[in-house]
Image (cartoon, rainbow, N blue to C red; front, side, top):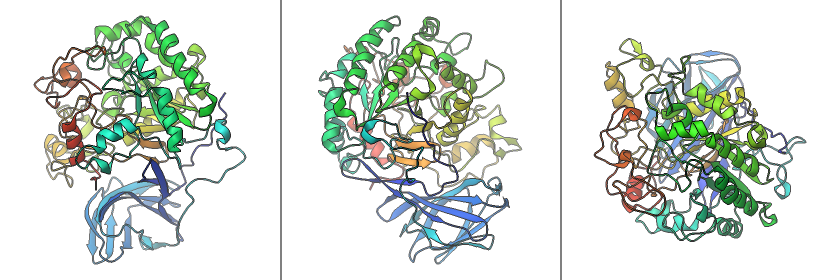
Length: 586
């Protein structure tokens, strides 16, 4: 059984920032300004490129703040090119930022990320900050990790599991994906980023020489991770019976009733390989069965969005049976870290007291019902992951769902299809809220979240640079949002997408890491029907000419044309992701 883990304390400021390394991830800390007059300022550089950088600013109040004015002096030559959630001016090196109303109140003891900006010049942290005239002096460089304590024994010999496997870790780089990326013009800039290894068929465990997974099997990847000196490897467990019941592009090899085969021929061999003693010091992160359980909430009868295949999987119980079995068996190993897929805000973000419209609370309750199935315990779950292989924005910097425009809150406006009553417009807020709801449904209070940022950057020429001035709610949102999809339920090969935040550990207190589980450049599904022996069908949501269905609000699919089968490489898509990357790729 997993020993209790020591959770990051929310009061700690100065979380880790990832930097690109030759063979994986290394981590450095942000500077922190400590208050003499009851305030703390965390000025965190989250990414940098050439002479530019992105930084986020967090204020911690010892006494309540009702409206703030924050000032500092930049190093000479540093300027702000754009900012969000702040009214700012700059004169020479002197920067002044003021709240924009809705983010002006900070309760006593509360830490709040108040704004972010894009700068050019030096990313060195300013020497001094003032809030409302009070000086926050004494910048410090905190350690890259908390010192060991008697209740946080670390991970000697792969035994006791650590709080966050990504902290300070070198994460495995899949050489097969890396070679494809490096062969693309400009691709060498990201070819050393760690990505997930997908076991999408039983044969992938052993290596099947397919275009999807290549010649390397699970043991080959684990051995290569040891050769790289990696601390962490990311494996996608993805072969449920009746897989992806509401889609066709990534259907799997197992029929709806083949749960026995899933357990004995797929999960059991994976457990045997991961459990070999030579991997005892390698932390294995398992991303478990994406796009499965949320379907049992949103795409089953009596919902209007019901799909017959999903009704079948809810009735036979094989999604719950398979996920709980995989989690329990893998969780029993001392060196594994299980993260169960939790959808994304554009799928699960709707909470309601009416079961007909509730996705958020019902999903958390469904996840909680796994505990006790097949001997699975809460200790077998290290956390959850959102946005896997999806495009939902990490943050929407220029608007909030409860913002009042035209006299009405945006998420209460029936004429605003992009919001559509959703409680969230980004993955950060969604994962923070979902984590709390999961804890309320029986999971340990030290669980962490992962967010897949491989394709949610939404940079390029269409990215807005500020908040719309329109008083028309529809125009306001369309001019302010960075997520450029026709509808947030669109999931297949979205045209105009870009690489998102590079993989990094501890970006927020509740987030273990930003990760690239979906390898950029690998297709979500074929644009037209392609005969194959991989069990993958044709889904109209991958057809760029498709006008949509009830599950995406009858909107255009937004998909790219000329795309191969899911998991197969698309040079054109990879090039577009590079071009539209945000933060930009140097």
